[in-house]
Image (cartoon, rainbow, N blue to C red):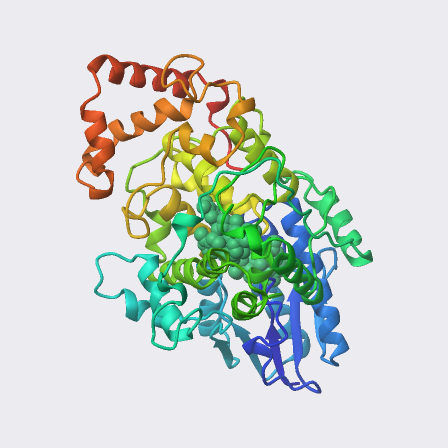
Length: 516
Ligand code: FAD
Ligand code: DLZ
């Protein structure tokens, strides 16, 4: 026979490079639902259901194109449980002439396949993943020799290279590269937020939900009300609805949070981009078109495009530029365990309980909940990179290490010592209060700085600055905060430290949790 073409669960794109020259007569596509992949971290149940269902639907599309496919579902007696054993078993059965795949998106898998490539006697071609705007080499060329790797400058280069939102004279449309200052408006609880577009599970999805419910019952998260798209056609519908209903307010309310509003004006497409059901190029072009042809506001369109052309490309570049050492970095030497309430949502901190509960229910929380609530609290309380990365990689439906790790270790924990961020993303309760209505129904008083009923974010914030003064006091972006700190009375400083110790030591939920 011809070539065995391995398709991973996040490579569900009929145009992927590994299928470009498929010979429908002689080649065989291999896809497998594998225990190692579903459990290398204990993924949220909805994430596993989403990937398995999308894989099964993709296999159907391949069959409809007349391609030969060997699809090993989870309960198949021939399921070997991991990629290499499965590949070897197919080689033994079909005796192919060659193997082909697109490089894996995660370091651990790339290593695994590179080792197998050296071991096997078959020609094994591992092709570049061309689904991104930029290559890893392009990022390396940009990054080499720079002391700071700021996303903003990489993004500007990509804007110029792709000509997205650019004027003919080479300047950005509207005269500014970014409209962040217009994108921090407090939420309006009375404003109508469109309901998210929900896809009804078909029989394939229902089967997968039942499978996940029985095989992964000890994993975190709810399987109730599964409504994610699992085909490209459905994902395109979600994208269209976002463009029609939410993009207009995306920019203005990008950082906003409201009680019991999980979806806000976000696009909810990260999960589809990350497994190949949507391409970042088509999404960016679609948003640009909405600006030119549908009169969508520039602050929304630029803000949205920056997330994909800017942040998404940048974190992928950074991941491959700095792996494997990036995963080991812990600049602030943080060692605290993850609080139990990151799994249970049982905490009186309203912002945290809301964000965790939405994560449990939907395997989704939007960016500011991840960064300024869950990330901020973890950094202020010193959670170790290992434990926090494990949590973020497990619980979100869009989580893959190449995008999760730079966001958590770099953006949230400053574990890379400032490669990604120029200062840590920490804040007291005032920021959360400004960007949400959480504090109004919280047990703690966001206006109080110290004392038993004060918002813990307030004293933990100053405690953080004091604890890491040696590392941050000369940071130009933190000068104002350290000047304020230096004017604080000893009494005030002592009270902050005392309250922080009481919170960190006495909180019954900060018992050491097993890594789930
Ligand atoms: P929108 O807010 O509608 O944004 C549009 C798209 O922009 C997203 O779908 C995503 O593809 C891209 N994007 C936005 N922000 C980022 C970013 N910081 N890095 C990379 N891409 C971005 N994103 C993931 O895809 N997987 C992750 O595992 C992940 N982990 C994160 C962990 C932390 C601590 C933080 C702070 C952010 C993380 N993000 C991750 C980025 C971002 O939060 C999610 O992409 C976003 O919330 C997904 O929801 P959405 O599709 O509605 O995004
Ligand atoms: C995330 C995931 C899961 C849960 N299950 C599978 C699977 O059973 N089979 C598969 O091919 N891929 C799966 N994936 C996605 C892979 O882990 C993914 O290819 C890597 O994370 C690389 O980005």
